[in-house]
Image (cartoon, rainbow, N blue to C red; front, side, top):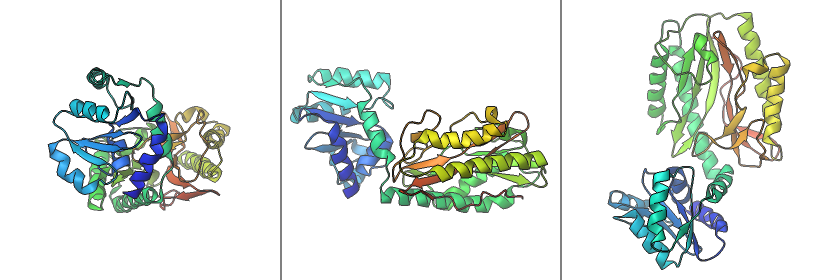
Length: 361
């Protein structure tokens, strides 16, 4: 738990004095600071102390896992919060805003006001945590690597099932099974396994459509391993495809490889996006690429930084991003190619080992 202790020490920089505290409630952030990966738990951090608050159901598990915080059991969360803040002489608390509902915020605000504790109305804590989580430790990178290995093993095992007459939904269901069988805790997101004209839908949903010869088949897939996600997209061909399909695939591959060449510490995310977007635009398909070139990945499938036209974050070593340009021709077909990479000083480490040359099944 040394890593979690370092993280708590870092996030304490938000606190301006001994009379302030941080209240962290989102599952992923509780896990980030404690190693406790469950659906319940609240973290309270002051200048000198840190606490993980759980109810009876999780107290034994938390005590066996967590060393970065004092584990405290509660019957009433708001009551124990008030007690801890009072004991630490706290008068102001920062809370997360993104995952806290309006109802929960008001309930917390009203409860703490009885103890003369005010809570923030800004996203200062959210921003600080997001910025901290952008740069991954070696342990985090190793977990992401393992998640990707599970994804690729499952991908390789499913390829023989992608053939004419098979339904999209059957591929999806089998992939989910393989990911869990191969060691994944689950899938990173609702897997995209689509064929034919549906491949023009960037986030198409698998259904009962049947694979036909001459189709593209898109697999946007990822697995979850010890809380960390992987993300990869490959577009494969089933049987003989048209020259236009080959042309579009080649353009997207060129855009993806060119964007990857830009990735290294010190480069702005918007410049990476621009590289991919310019290649697709110069090929006269700019209007067919309507999403960002990439996004951060970690404890959430979508994190900072955003690799987009407005992405103003400068990459630094340890950040993990995807590079996933695509071209989508309405009611015809689409192509997307996605790798997940870790930024290094001089370039990147590509977690994806699966070929990007067009796979023909």
